[in-house]
Image (tube, rainbow, N blue to C red):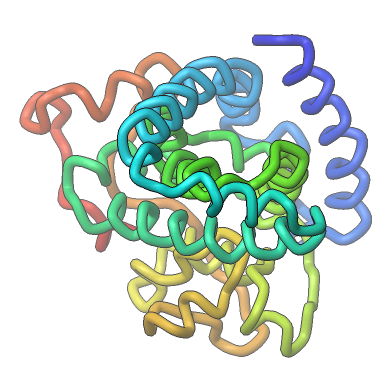
Length: 265
């Protein structure tokens, strides 16, 4: 846990707790809901292993594949206005995120890491943090490595990082937010809540992190009107505590008494 991460968490508390109270999708859900303190541990400690993994991926990529990219590409990209770089980054990064996210649903070994995130049964802003650090490091690498390879500027990447994180908290938040026709373009809480739905029709849908049109493009969009899921979670027998959840994907399947995954939700 570092001070910067702690400050960001406190700011998130000050922003999202009031918003969830004022615009609650599920008004009866408590702030200290089920598994609140378990997810708080993720929020406090996930940043260190994730950052190490991301730095390793970027270093490896830039020292290998990066050597094949002409220097003028990075010069041209980084010379653009920051706002234009950020717009380009959002598109490039979300295609990478979509691919990695879909892989974590499709590959059984990867699903065991991602199942930790889908074991959430009550969604709110804090639930966004319950991601196995290996899952988070890989998906973030899929988003950020192309940005460094193409030579986007540090300010643009940093600004995107802030947007990426804030949007991720909003997607999981217990808020009722109607974005109208924009829901087919931009990922909304309704869009992502359906991704977490424990309902057969919603399995393996809505993979994008920020741009819903990517799911439209690949035929994985699921938004049934203005409805929201009745329940969240999966059938996999995920252990309840932080340490057990970290170990879960690494334990041979036969030793965890796993039931079949609920469609790899």
